[in-house]
Length: 127
Image 1 (cartoon, rainbow, N blue to C red):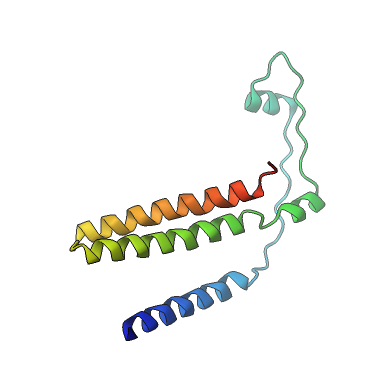
Image 2 (image 1 turned 90 degrees about the horizontal axis):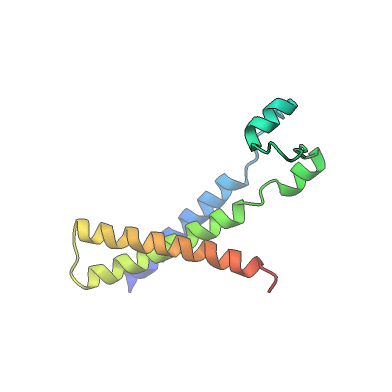
């Protein structure tokens, strides 16, 4: 039971440290907006028979969408870690060692990450 408490504390400490690293903001200078000619837009979208309507996002729209993908990444990482640990412990209890154990953890991580992102996507849908 003592090792479970130590593992839980280590996992919590790692989560807190990574959250602090994510919380710091880097000062980044804005990049210039690329100007595309009509020929460039036709070459990119290959719509010969239709007019091309492409607009750059305004600075307000850029601010509104900034960091919108981060919750998806965090949820996938957390669920992947939980899945990897759970599947790895299950494999360990069933006698898996070495590559078998690593494979079980990797499969659990992949399934957990996909499930976490899918649940976030399904939760955001308007049914």
